[in-house]
Amino acid sequence: MWADLHERTDGLRGPLLFSPPSSLPVTFHEIASILRGARDAPGSTKLNYFRAYVEGREDYDLARQFLESEDLGAAGIEATLARAFDPDLGPYGKRAGLIVNGGLQWSHEVHERLVPHAEALGAVEAGTVTIDITLFIGSYGATPFGAHIDDSTHRTIIFNLGPGIKDVDIWPRECVEAQFGPVRNIIDTGTICIAPAHFSIAPGEAFVLPSNEFHIAYNNAVSTAATLVLDHPSDVHLAERELTFLRHDLYDDMPNGKTWQLTLARLAELGRLRSRSNGCLRYPPPPRAVSMQYLQRRSVIRIDPRWPVLAEAIGSAAVVYARGRHILANGVSRAVVMLVEAERATVEDFLEAVVSEGGNLTTGLQVVEFLLGAGGANVE
Image 1 (cartoon, rainbow, N blue to C red):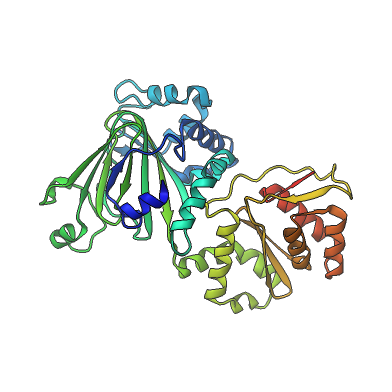
Image 2 (cartoon, rainbow, N blue to C red):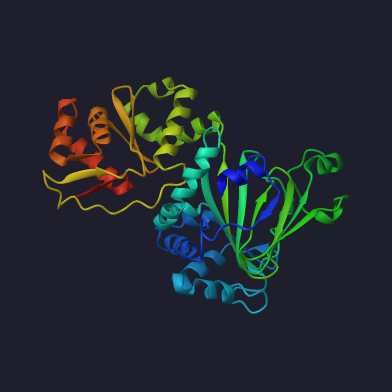
């Protein structure tokens, strides 16, 4: 599907309404998994990824109420969403709905589901690409910021799961900017002097959205859409993001300002390694609880071949990436490379390799715990 779609839409720039194959990237089953994962995730910062609307205004408490009170089981999730966001009778108010960003970070199941799609997209997309899932759920009409353009690096494919229709209006960017100047959104779409191109996405259909044109989408009836968002980050963005991830560890390992000896190009390359380690999926999956007390000397650590474990030297240390996460440690790079090349090693052999490189047993065990918790390796 992806190679053909990529060719037909000028690199997923759209617009194109199409009927996807039955094997969608995300179904209601995975949506239930995302919502359960968000509900069970610790802390309140997860709600930063939720935008909720009631009667055209933002409602900052709706997401919390929804996650805490609703049955999010896969078997009943369609009925749950249809009842919760009924435009007139829903318990959260008239025309309520949710937009959920960063869906990948709460569900191992969605990661597993997206593996073949990410591989196919990686084969046709040039340069570094990261993939994420955004959910549009409910009957909230349109978001209050009106017609808008997305980041020019984005490519967006909307899969409407229904039961209602999702409508999209699109205006050419050059026409809007000729009228209003270099703006990013128009609150009152009625003031745009040209008529939009209109697309109705029926349940089971998909739409390639021209993200860099002015657009607005409407959920006037209860509808759930899973949107695949591809981002093509620049080297500067990759470097900035990677420095954010590594800053604390680099400061501890490289005192006296040596952190800044890492060039922009080097940080960008580390960012690409992080992305590759997670199959180009934007967010790592939730970390897994690991019990080390049952680990034996002859226990076998096996790399999961679907998710490359990557190590890169930084000064005397090495940063090890697995499933989009990292650990920075001294004296482990050769041991990790040995493990990756062989795809398996006993705990004893791995730790001996760490010690022979100048590392210590504590550091070696921390790397093992990291690989197992991140999901880059398993123990047999």
